[in-house]
Amino acid sequence: MRLTILGSGTNVHPTRAAAGYLVQTDQTLLLDFGPRTLVNLIKTKTDRHRITHILFSHFHADHFSDFITFFFDAVYVSKFVGVRPDLTLIGPRGTRRLFGSILRTFPGFKTAPFRVRIREVADRSFSLGHTRIVPRTVLHSSRLHCLGYRIEYGGKVLAYSGDAQHCVNLVRLCRHADVAVLDCSFPANRPGPGHMHAGDCGKVAQEAGVTRLILSHLYPIAERYDVKRQAGRLFAGRTTVGRDLMTVVL
Ligand SMILES: [Zn+2]
Ligand SMILES: [Zn+2]
Image (cartoon, rainbow, N blue to C red; front, side, top):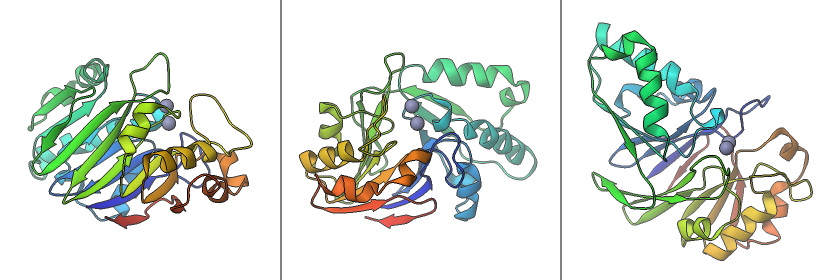
């Protein structure tokens, strides 16, 4: 399994794209598709037309807005250059309503020469080929259903928190993961609502017994502090501050 961070920041950040991750197993998947991640996806030289499944954690703009640009391009290319495979959009409650209305709003989308499937998931695992996906409801916003994802392939486990606070489901999601990519919006000494800070990330990683922790979803304020060291006070394993276009092979 190969993970490429397309975006390790948030909506507006001077140096990082917002949330987005390319995961390559026997499938080519995206986890979230926030602003500026499409440009980074193109930089990876991955054929974007081979992406068949996009998994969304929740619908704050920093996790999905580049989908619109991606989809316009996909329709255009498949009409005039070459047909792409069908596309499945997977996400929490609200996925059907959001993408249903986006697809209805733009007349050109209706004539896409490939199928678009929309699938809402909650706390039940499913498989795509040989890749097992475990979505879990996590605590982030009282107004939105929010998911983290656990991806299992070839005996390796990648856990992604989406946006989350420390909660039991998040620790379960990360249990014995080889790599856990966690929402480290804030430094431990400057916490904020709805997200984890570096200390929380260390705590989740330690409680779940993960092998490697990657801190991501950094707000600009997190850059001003040593978040790696702050997480390391609670987590004894390897900790890395995520960077755009960083690749990890599991
Ligand atoms: Zn959010
Ligand atoms: Zn976010």
